[in-house]
Image 1: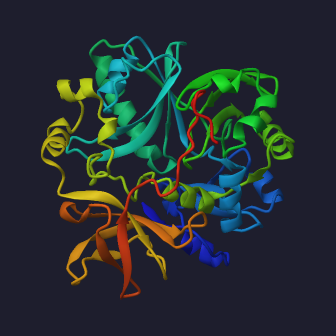
Image 2: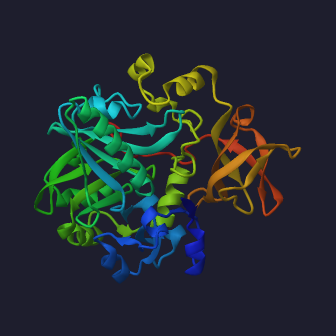
Image 3: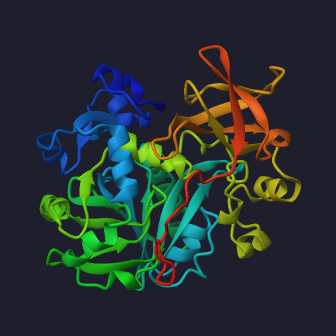
Length: 412
């Protein structure tokens, strides 16, 4: 399912941070990649397009990945994430239905609150990670990974069929990415850039909360304060018909320097922020506990032990997993996904899952899984790069200071 975007990037003559390239079943079947409603806009703006999760998306723009990465950290970047799967779940039993599939406590989530969660397998692995938003309007809004579109759609459809057969009230509707755009505006100037286009006070929208708003005069668009970079930012869901106009206005805004950013930058930013990527740090063979996401498993759900894979996951919480996700710092040649991790005597410890040069910090950053006894910060080890050992050290994550917004905690 997953391969490195470096193959497509190499063909395009690209250098810099790597991102995982996910191919969809449709692409593998030879149907060709789909296009988001902003495809032509990206091409006109000089985006270098690659197949990502069955969609043609920009991997980078003319300024290069490292410069673009630093621009997002210092100002703001605009990402097209319309390929991601957006879903509405309605019906009287929508919350208990979703809780039967994930580890979140949706009953306790306030209206307009958003939560990161995982859909789990019966063996304790992860089907997908997603953001779940509980609205006061009779539905729950989900945003999940494009690379797992088929698996998530199948899971929801099969589960709904069973629930409906028992007389439960659940309705599932998926957004079409050709009709809806999802824009991720990320960086310290994101709020200043977006505020003139919306009719809500963004200072009152906390991190991981959501609201309907008029965007550029169009009612009932959804704005969620969240992101995948470690910076303040928003995911903005708008109809396809206004996506280009909204993008143009954000890029032309006078309240913050906004630039278009591509997949390569999105990946290097999330690695610096220590955030998991499905297919790298998460999979059906990796539990949320191994991935360092124990905090996702809500207290009430632990007590009830009523989610898929509860027996295995709760045992790992009690006893500790045999392997753990760790951050890694190194100099010299960067370690990429698949590089072996060994101790100073050459004994195998694990494998790198994501890695890149760090434009923010200098040197290299990576994530990977190692045996639990080697997971302590400060542990020295070697990363095997081109069959040669590279000195590295286990480091705390995130690698950079995160700047998530709350009204009483603004970036200094």
